[in-house]
Length: 211
DNA sequence: CGGCTGATGATCT
DNA sequence: GATCATCAGCCGG
Image (cartoon, rainbow, N blue to C red):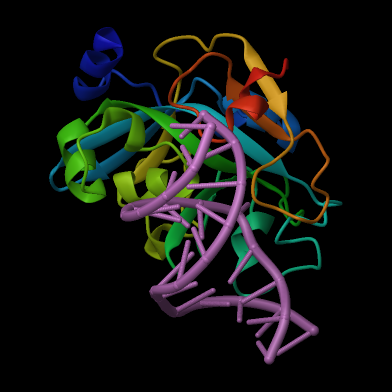
């Protein structure tokens, strides 16, 4: 992890090109495990390693785009690799990566990060110094990175305030489970996580299933 | 760790 | 007016 932090702070993260992202949303959700999320802020560079994702598909009643485009979900219909940001429960921002398209509403929710760079800034934004609580859970992740609706629709494969980078350390074994906190299409195994990572959210019983 | 509750506000019906 | 892709705090084991 120390190696990863140094690389992230030293600008050694390589930005992913859109052609590197799998063109299918479930494959993208798996692919993103281990990849780096980079947030550029005046206070410096924040970065984390993705350890947990969920896929939301076009034919999936749990997907915000299931009933077609609306003002809120339009970013899900952008070509893969764009940000879809929305407010959940009036309290928590959610950061997603559009997963298909253009014109197809699907995406990947980023649910947890292992902090790599800018830990002090994350601690300040989160109001805690507990490393495990900085970005474990989608709302915490967005708060740690200072993600808000101003980033909705942003191209994450381009230089800018938020982008996706290659893995600084390869992902370990990937586990799979049902998604968390939904009621529609709740049985589908569309949640992915790095097995054994302590930075993964959710109840322990979901985090022991194989991928 | 698991289970429960209230807060909170945008979105869509 | 109902419905949330959540979280912090509190409780019991």
